[in-house]
Length: 225
Ligand SMILES: Nc1ncnc2c1ncn2[C@@H]1O[C@H](COP(=O)(O)OP(=O)(O)OP(=O)(O)O)[C@@H](O)[C@H]1O
Image (cartoon, rainbow, N blue to C red; front, top):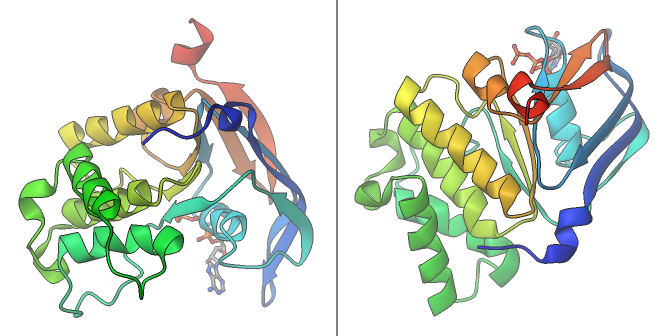
């Protein structure tokens, strides 16, 4: 699904973001700028605060100070499923949840919703799992289900927390290609990662250390283009 061309000039910005858990300062004046049309990676050591920052960007947590500006709706692919895995829901049910933000969960599915759900499942290669229950999936299959749910929203901003963790090499490449395609469609794509392949496939790498973004640099592949 293409987003409007207006989104290609769009930017996600965080200004002077501060956050602490009780007795644990995590973010200390983060300045973040993520442009549409590029895949931006956020790297940092374990515990550096990447998930916390993504939570704040997505509105899951409120910063203690600072602001986040978004050019439109946002779709968040968390590190782990936010759904109780014991719920008797299928892959298709979960991906269909992506249509709720536009349609309202109480309204019946439209033809366009069914089409978007099917297209998203095919795009991440899980259409053959459509009727499988969530608790019968591998970790990688759950991850791709969550990605399909995000695609179904049609949001111009996609934020993913370690989308390639636990995936085999072939699926990691599928995910990296998908992120590049989403950026090429004019979306804002921000993902936290420790994965060298995913970093190499990104256009910009931001380093989160000591509570701030210390460096923003193009990856080698982007630099030689
Ligand atoms: N709910 C919480 N309550 C208290 N402390 C927390 C909570 N969640 C995270 N932390 C702590 O905040 C710090 C930042 O955690 P966060 O999960 O944001 O880091 P991360 O960079 O995403 O780490 P990783 O690469 O291991 O996923 C860590 O020291 C972590 O232990």
